[in-house]
Image (tube, rainbow, N blue to C red; front, side):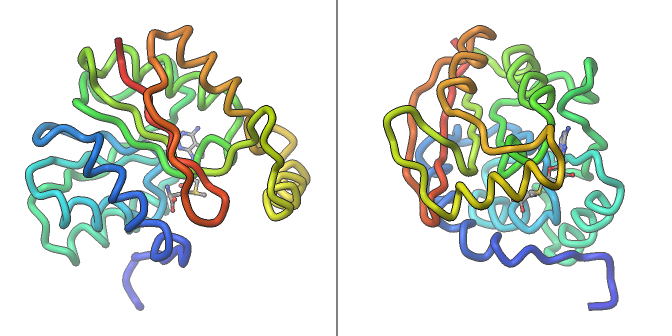
Length: 200
Ligand SMILES: C[S@@+](CC[C@H](N)C(=O)[O-])C[C@H]1O[C@@H](n2cnc3c(N)ncnc32)[C@H](O)[C@@H]1O
């Protein structure tokens, strides 16, 4: 490809299992804010499958924004908005409200401050009952961590000491402190979880 579209092979494997959960938990209409959209392949896939919703992608990386734009243009969808430059850890976000929020594979590949920002802003932007959906690997108390995730965690921490697979209980406590209640934990392929919170 000569254009700016990037490709992350994992998106082809996880997009349909994630979509199955989204069909259950997203509202029928409104705006879904995606944090850390990366290549933009997820947002285009979900927007095609869920035409009643408007998707607002975002990422702090300018190359990711170019890729998101390119995928959205190629898909010719009228329910994907131009991507926002958005760092989850920032005190101010460039958006005032969202009916639902989605964040795939960011929590372990960013400093903890990004997850703090995600929860804090989720509580501000979402309406009562609005869902915040996370997808990625987590460790859980009393559940043996898959060997592949132990190795992945070590690799993440070697690459950046501020990264690492988070303990689900820590994320849930952080969310609860901001007024976001845990409503579902779904086991996903390749030892990932989809975790759904709802604003009270
Ligand atoms: C592993 S990629 C996941 C991308 C995409 N969601 C996916 O699953 O293919 C991690 C993404 O998190 C973004 N990211 C890192 N730190 C962030 C932060 N503080 N706020 C928002 N996004 C961040 C990166 O720019 C990158 O696009």
